[in-house]
Length: 278
Ligand code: AMP
Ligand code: FE
Ligand code: FE
Ligand code: ZN
Image (tube, rainbow, N blue to C red; front, side, top):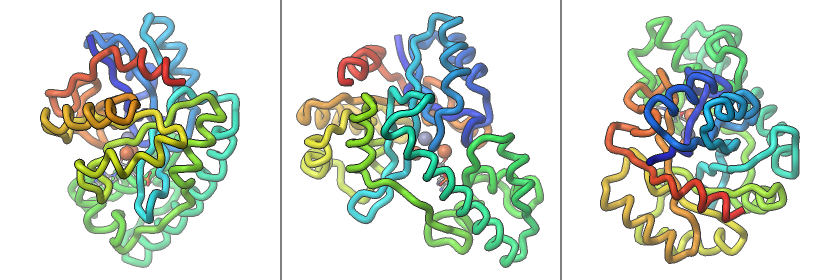
């Protein structure tokens, strides 16, 4: 029995609809999922309805890029209400800043000689929140790059010529506003932080005191030893060890719902622990 608490749909930079994701989750026998599209809750109603129809447990949430000690941290926030709330209402600013950033990325790519119009990127996104993977999709179609990682390495990643920052909440704001929304914030894929795994326990203590609810421990990039190590750290901090595939459909073709690169399995008791930590 397993769950998957990190999934992206067509409402952000995934290529499957929430309904398709629910159907796939049911087909492989998952008992619960969370939808975590970047900066939006717009896919929540569709996913919740599809999940209810299949008796699949469901959590609506998001993945935010937040600032923590001059680093970019990804924060999964679970149990957010698409009708609004203290954190939910701040997400509008994030989408506006993302839109302005997207216009700047398009302008920079044009200056670099790539003929990419924002309208093409909008078409690629299918109307959802636009992210850099959609730029990568257009770049691939037009023959400028071979694949998504190449688009990031050459143009889109931090430090590359089309990179443009956007507004972020701090980790502290996301956690505090999240608690005010009766939501639970969880640090996503902590290996992307410039912090040794042995430092997680001490490093995150301050965030735990503000209400941090968990750390993503079951993640495809981790060895079994690292997953166990993060579970131990979470136990020591008294927070929940969560996990998920970070499925993005065609934008990350090596990842599958539920199983990640093939060996992922997020135990289903995590779902209940997360509910209890609200
Ligand atoms: P954005 O939301 O526009 O800032 O884009 C961030 C998204 O791009 C992440 O959620 C990933 O899906 C993807 N991404 C970030 N870095 C890379 C990379 N180096 N290679 C492939 N995809 C990436
Ligand atoms: Fe993404
Ligand atoms: Fe992420
Ligand atoms: Zn993600």
